Amino acid sequence: MKRLFAYGGCVMIGIAAGWFFGYTRPVARQQRELLAQYENAKEILHMMDAQMTNTASELPDLLTAMKRNDRDVAMVGLRGIEILDRGDVAGAKKYLAYWIGSYYRVYHTAGDTNLIARIERAASTNAVIAAEIMKKTASWK
Image 1: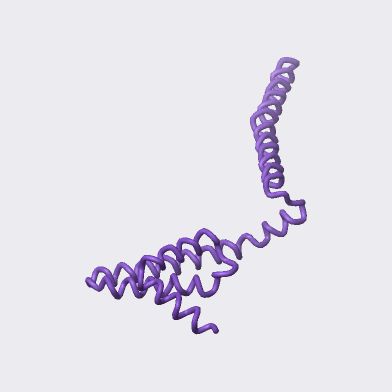
Image 2 (image 1 turned 90 degrees about the vertical axis):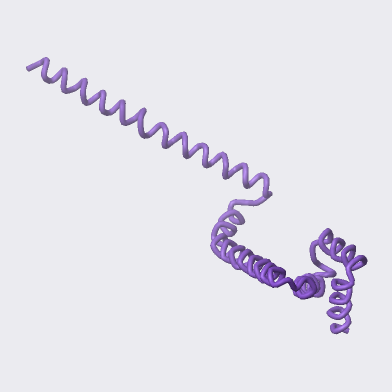
């Protein structure tokens, strides 16, 4: 009978030790790693905890906006390729120049300065882009 209790006690201690070292330790290690990643992101982004929480709550909206933007870019690219496949190179240039001019018209003072500079360089050598930029900026005056 004593041996039965001793064996039973050893089995229980073994199960408890296995659970402790096999489950709780990896979970705790994973939590420490996640906390370290969170702290690292907070340090890189120079944010406080409240700002990180606000950013996390806005993430679904940001992802939706990114998805919509990516879809729009894909639609523009697809339409440009369809026009090129018809053999209408001039039409494709005019179509794509419209989108370039649209960006330039809206963001020429507050947009990506590298992209604005590239558009202006392209306009200096491409008459279609130059005409689109002049037409759009002239209509704003």
